[in-house]
Length: 298
Image 1 (cartoon, rainbow, N blue to C red):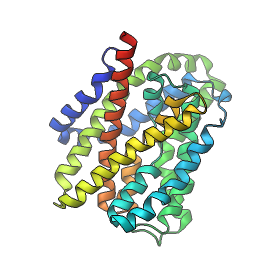
Image 2: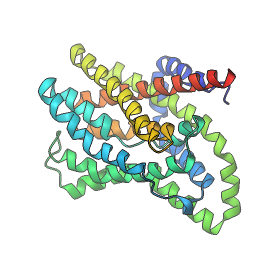
Image 3: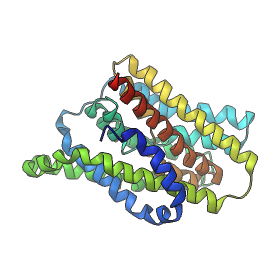
C-alpha cells in the first residue's frame, strides 16, 4: 500500500478525466463508500476513549469565525462569487475520510476521529447561521436550514458512529473483525477519490456557462484558501505536537457536502470553487505522501 499511495491522486485525476461520465453515474455509491470508511475507522478505535483535546478548540474557532472574515473583504475587493466561494471553502466540514490520509501521514487516529465528529456537528450549527444572511435562501427558517444540513451529514457520520458504538457494546467480536479491516479504507478511499474527481470534471464540462474570468478568479481563490488552511492547521498543530493531524483536519474537506451546500444556498460558481478545492487538496495530499515516502527511503 505504502509503495503505491503517492500515485493514487495522479492516477485518479487521469482516469477521472477520461471516465468523467461513468464517474458521474457512480456518485450514487459514494455515500456508501464513505459510510464503510467511517464504520471501519470507528470500529478500530475505542469510542469510550475519545476525548475533546486542547487542539480541537482553535480549529473549531477557526472554522466558525474565519468564513465571515474571508467573505466580508472579498465581497468588496473581488466579487460576490469569489467571496462566497472562499467562505464555503472554509466553512465546508472536515472530510469523512480524513482519518485514512492523516493516519498514513503519521497523525493520531483517535485525535482525527474525535474531530471528524465534532467538526461535522459544528457545521450543522454554524453553516445555517451564515446562510441566513448570505446566499439565495436567506428566507429559509433557521430550524429548517439546520435540519437540512443535519440530514446531509448524519448518514455519513452519525449512523456509522452509532453502529460502531452498538457493536463495541453488544458484539465486541464482530467489532474486532471489522477493526481488522481498517487497512481496506485506503482502497475504498482511492476508489471514492477517483469517482469524486471524475464527477468534478463532469460538472465543469457539462455545466460551465463560459464566464472564464470569473472561473479563473474562483479557481485561484480556492487554491489559495486550500493551501492556507493546510499551512495554518500545521502551525496550530505544532503547539500541540501533532501538526499533521491539525493540518489535515483544517485543510481536508468533505467537498461532496460542501458542493451541495454551495449549490443549494449560494451561487453556482461557489460550487465550482469547491469542486476545484477537491483537486487542490488532493494535489497537496499526494505531495505529502510523496515527500514522506522519499524521506522514509533516505
